[in-house]
Image (cartoon, rainbow over all chains, first blue to last red; front, side, top):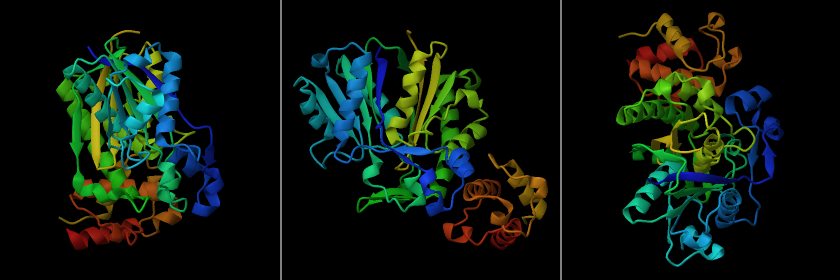
Length: 308
Length: 78
C-alpha cells in the first residue's frame, strides 16, 4: 500500500506580530489571542521564491528520513503562488535538486484544500503508474499578495512549506476521500492584480456549513464512528472558524488541535504541519483531515496508522 | 411565519462560540455596545439564516445592529 512515511516542515524564522497592529485595526489582545488565534504570522525572506521554500522543506524531510534522492520518481507541488506562470515550480525544484530525469513533476493549483487533494492524487498517480518514491510539497507564500492594510487577510496568513514522503513503506495509509467545489463562491477569496481579497463572512459561513457536512459524509463513506476517531486535523483557517466547526461536530476540543498561533494560516501547509507531530504520537491511530477554502473547494480524508 | 424577539434570542443563544451573557443582552442596544464583536455577529447571522432559511445580503448586515433590528428585518422579509 502507498501512504505517508514522513513529513518535513519549513516555517520561516521571521515573524510579524499582530500585537503591533492593534492601533491600526482597533484590536485588543483578547480578539487576537482568542478569536483570530494568531499572534504572529511567519514571513519568508524577500528574495526567497516558492521553490526555495519547497527545497527547505525537502531538506527538513531529508534530515529525518533516510531516502535516496536519486530514486524519487514523483514530485508534486501544491501552490497558487508559483515561481513563474511557467514553467511549473516542481520542474524548477527538480532542477535545483538535480533529481532523476525519470521523475514525474507537476503542480496542483489549489489552496487550503490542496494537501488533501494532493495526497489523494499522489497516492493514485503512484499506484496507477507503479511508482515508489513520491514527494508531495505544499508551498504557498501569501505574503507576496497580501495588502498590509487589509484587516481580513494581513492578520491571518503566514508562509510555510512542507514535504511529505509518500512511498510503499508507510506509517499511515488513507481510506476513501470526499471532495467538493462551490465555484459560485469563487470571488469570495480571490487574488486580482496581485492583491488578495477575502470576504470573511462568506468564508466563515462556507466553512461552518460545509466542513461538518463533509466530515459526516466522510464517516459514512468509510464506515467510521466519529466518536472513535483519535485526532481531527482541520485546516487552520482561524481559531474562530476552527472552534465553530468542532462545536458543530460536537468534537472533543482535545482531539482537534489549533496550533497556528505563532505562524498563521499557512494555506495548504497547515494540515501537514500538524500531521508531522501526529505521526510521532503512537497513541494516534486514526486521523481525519479536512482542507477547505479558496475555490471554494474542500476535501476530507481519513488516515490509518499501519506502523510506528 | 413571523419572527419574535424570543425566537431570535433563542437562536442567538444556540450560536456557537458566543462569549456574551445572553441574560444581559438588551434587544434595542447595538451589539457593538454590548461587547459583541464582528466574529460573534457572523455566528449570529449564520444561525439566523439557517433557522429561517434566508440569505442576508452583505449590504444589509451593517444595518442589523441589534436584536430588534434583526427581528424587524426578518418580519419585512419573511
